[in-house]
Length: 211
Image 1 (cartoon, helix red, strand yellow):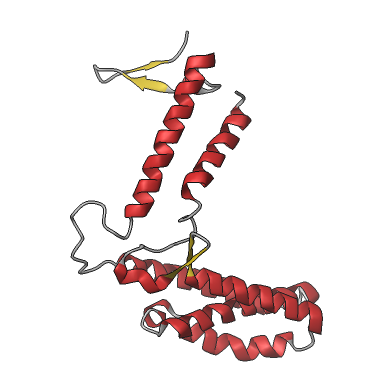
Image 2 (image 1 turned 60 degrees about the vertical axis):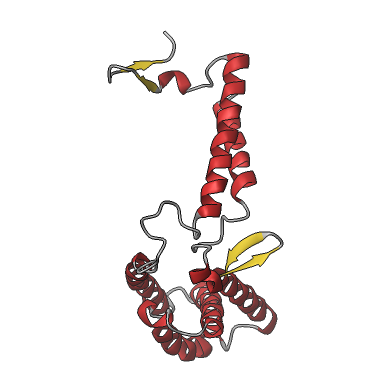
């Protein structure tokens, strides 16, 4: 099996065993139950779903109605949207309001994209605003996420209920990859590139496959 075919097969196995949880983006426990929604067997992050919906609707509206109104709407939308979405404040808002804010962010991305595409020289302040805001939000959100499991009674007790399904999927994927490798080794010898991977020895050293 070629290296590219092997990578494609590994990607297929990964998708098969993880697609239901790939876009959850949150722990799947009772404490975080309002952060996700299940659609057709797939657990999806509600914030990302709302943002994607806003992006699609905003793009369709711009295409259908023209863009003369885009910059004024973006101007009126940006300040309240960015302030209300600041991570330390956003996390305390009602879930439906957070969904609306994420949909508004998707709309703002569509509007900003149109403004930049139609007037690259005049639209650069919007690009600076949103890129700078994204960098600040990313740092602040990382600090918020680092504390999302504080005081949880399951801490320190192994894999918690929030990540049990993800751990089960990872185990199934590991077993599938192991079976695939065993089959390849039994039929054709080491896959391409495997002969260059050092193997651990009992004495703590390493040895390589093949000659």
